Length: 139
Image 1: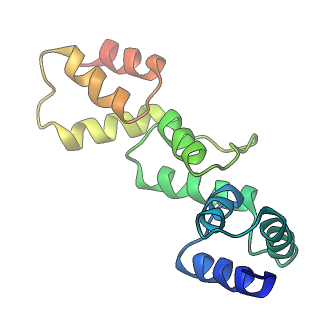
Image 2: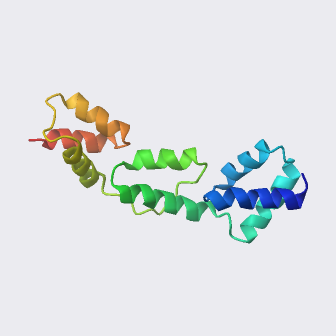
Protein backbone atom coordinates (compact mmCIF):
# COMPACT_ATOMS: atom_id res chain seq x y z
CA UNK A 1 0.00 0.00 0.00
CA UNK A 2 1.39 3.41 -0.91
CA UNK A 3 1.32 6.64 1.09
CA UNK A 4 -1.92 8.01 -0.41
CA UNK A 5 -3.83 4.79 0.22
CA UNK A 6 -2.47 4.57 3.77
CA UNK A 7 -3.37 8.21 4.42
CA UNK A 8 -6.90 7.59 3.12
CA UNK A 9 -7.24 4.51 5.31
CA UNK A 10 -6.08 6.50 8.34
CA UNK A 11 -8.69 9.17 7.65
CA UNK A 12 -11.38 6.50 7.37
CA UNK A 13 -10.34 5.15 10.78
CA UNK A 14 -10.39 8.65 12.25
CA UNK A 15 -13.77 9.34 10.68
CA UNK A 16 -15.35 6.68 12.91
CA UNK A 17 -13.89 8.05 16.17
CA UNK A 18 -10.89 9.93 17.45
CA UNK A 19 -7.96 7.59 17.92
CA UNK A 20 -4.73 7.91 19.81
CA UNK A 21 -1.50 7.72 17.89
CA UNK A 22 -0.89 4.23 19.27
CA UNK A 23 -4.37 3.01 18.31
CA UNK A 24 -3.99 4.36 14.78
CA UNK A 25 -0.53 2.80 14.40
CA UNK A 26 -1.94 -0.57 15.46
CA UNK A 27 -4.87 -0.35 13.03
CA UNK A 28 -2.63 0.65 10.14
CA UNK A 29 -0.17 -2.12 11.00
CA UNK A 30 -3.07 -4.61 10.94
CA UNK A 31 -3.75 -3.46 7.36
CA UNK A 32 -0.21 -4.59 6.46
CA UNK A 33 1.08 -1.08 5.83
CA UNK A 34 4.84 -0.71 6.05
CA UNK A 35 6.26 1.06 9.10
CA UNK A 36 7.98 3.90 7.17
CA UNK A 37 4.68 4.76 5.45
CA UNK A 38 2.86 4.65 8.79
CA UNK A 39 5.43 7.08 10.20
CA UNK A 40 4.89 9.49 7.29
CA UNK A 41 1.12 9.32 7.69
CA UNK A 42 1.32 9.90 11.46
CA UNK A 43 3.60 12.93 11.01
CA UNK A 44 1.23 14.43 8.43
CA UNK A 45 -1.85 13.80 10.60
CA UNK A 46 -0.14 15.41 13.59
CA UNK A 47 0.71 18.47 11.52
CA UNK A 48 -2.92 18.68 10.42
CA UNK A 49 -4.00 18.21 14.07
CA UNK A 50 -6.05 15.11 13.31
CA UNK A 51 -4.00 13.36 15.98
CA UNK A 52 -3.42 15.05 19.32
CA UNK A 53 -2.99 12.54 22.15
CA UNK A 54 -2.96 15.13 24.94
CA UNK A 55 -6.19 16.77 23.79
CA UNK A 56 -7.81 13.35 23.40
CA UNK A 57 -6.61 12.30 26.87
CA UNK A 58 -8.28 15.37 28.42
CA UNK A 59 -11.48 14.69 26.48
CA UNK A 60 -11.61 11.02 27.49
CA UNK A 61 -10.90 11.86 31.13
CA UNK A 62 -13.63 14.49 31.22
CA UNK A 63 -16.06 12.17 29.44
CA UNK A 64 -15.72 9.52 32.15
CA UNK A 65 -15.63 12.10 34.94
CA UNK A 66 -18.85 13.66 33.68
CA UNK A 67 -20.60 10.28 33.84
CA UNK A 68 -19.99 10.30 37.61
CA UNK A 69 -19.74 6.53 37.80
CA UNK A 70 -16.00 5.89 38.05
CA UNK A 71 -13.02 6.77 40.18
CA UNK A 72 -9.74 8.32 39.10
CA UNK A 73 -7.93 4.96 38.92
CA UNK A 74 -10.53 3.49 36.54
CA UNK A 75 -10.37 6.52 34.27
CA UNK A 76 -6.57 6.39 34.18
CA UNK A 77 -6.74 2.70 33.26
CA UNK A 78 -9.05 3.57 30.38
CA UNK A 79 -6.52 6.15 29.19
CA UNK A 80 -3.71 3.59 29.33
CA UNK A 81 -5.89 1.08 27.47
CA UNK A 82 -6.30 3.63 24.67
CA UNK A 83 -2.53 4.25 24.70
CA UNK A 84 -3.01 7.82 25.90
CA UNK A 85 -0.86 9.80 28.34
CA UNK A 86 -2.27 10.71 31.72
CA UNK A 87 -2.33 14.52 31.82
CA UNK A 88 -0.43 15.96 34.77
CA UNK A 89 -2.50 19.05 35.52
CA UNK A 90 -5.94 17.47 35.53
CA UNK A 91 -8.71 18.77 37.67
CA UNK A 92 -9.45 15.48 39.42
CA UNK A 93 -12.96 14.45 40.20
CA UNK A 94 -14.37 14.59 43.73
CA UNK A 95 -14.17 10.84 44.22
CA UNK A 96 -15.84 10.91 47.61
CA UNK A 97 -18.94 12.67 46.28
CA UNK A 98 -19.11 10.42 43.22
CA UNK A 99 -18.74 7.27 45.34
CA UNK A 100 -21.54 8.38 47.68
CA UNK A 101 -23.76 9.20 44.72
CA UNK A 102 -23.35 5.87 42.95
CA UNK A 103 -23.79 3.94 46.18
CA UNK A 104 -27.15 5.59 46.83
CA UNK A 105 -28.11 4.97 43.21
CA UNK A 106 -27.03 1.30 43.27
CA UNK A 107 -28.28 0.29 46.71
CA UNK A 108 -31.59 1.44 48.19
CA UNK A 109 -30.15 0.31 51.50
CA UNK A 110 -26.43 -0.22 52.02
CA UNK A 111 -25.52 -3.89 52.45
CA UNK A 112 -24.52 -5.08 55.90
CA UNK A 113 -21.36 -6.66 54.55
CA UNK A 114 -18.80 -3.87 54.03
CA UNK A 115 -16.84 -6.14 51.67
CA UNK A 116 -19.65 -5.92 49.14
CA UNK A 117 -19.48 -2.11 49.18
CA UNK A 118 -15.68 -2.18 48.99
CA UNK A 119 -15.70 -4.57 46.02
CA UNK A 120 -18.30 -2.50 44.18
CA UNK A 121 -16.29 0.70 44.62
CA UNK A 122 -12.97 -0.96 43.90
CA UNK A 123 -14.24 -2.38 40.58
CA UNK A 124 -15.22 1.16 39.63
CA UNK A 125 -11.71 2.45 40.28
CA UNK A 126 -12.04 4.28 43.58
CA UNK A 127 -8.95 4.56 45.74
CA UNK A 128 -8.63 2.61 48.97
CA UNK A 129 -8.64 5.88 50.93
CA UNK A 130 -12.04 6.82 49.53
CA UNK A 131 -13.40 3.33 50.15
CA UNK A 132 -12.22 3.31 53.76
CA UNK A 133 -13.68 6.83 54.29
CA UNK A 134 -17.03 5.69 52.88
CA UNK A 135 -17.05 2.57 55.03
CA UNK A 136 -16.04 4.56 58.09
CA UNK A 137 -18.83 7.11 57.60
CA UNK A 138 -21.69 4.82 56.68
CA UNK A 139 -24.74 4.97 58.85
